[in-house]
Image 1 (tube, rainbow, N blue to C red):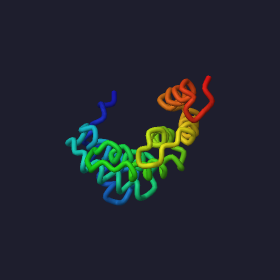
Image 2 (image 1 turned 45 degrees about the horizontal axis):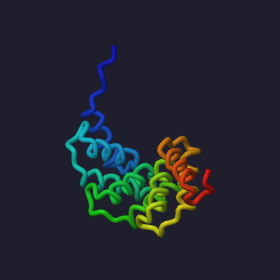
Image 3 (image 1 turned 90 degrees about the vertical axis):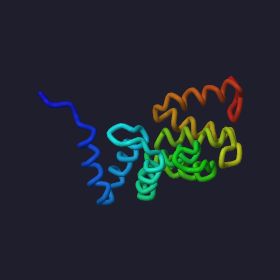
Length: 150
């Protein structure tokens, strides 16, 4: 029988890899700090770690930076910068980022309001299996916002 995983040891191994510049490990450590699981909850530290990983092109970290900036988690809110990070992650095909960038376009957060662009992004994320994007796209169709009403 295997012992249950020890989140403390996972943190230690991720910390070693992060210190060597691993974007994946930096993103994992950020997750631990954001959730307060296996590490002390610290949104500022999570943002800093996600930033390091995002600068290296990690799409998950780029999306997480967008969420932090969009909601003022560990950093002052900045819709324009949030949309920029969502764009970087969305261009890599991350459905969650496509959804979040769609929200920015639908509501005019950090970008000009453009429901047609929002529908395109929701459709991409929906095709990627994102259930929230599927609901958001359905809502646009129901209202005829950016797409033909049906």
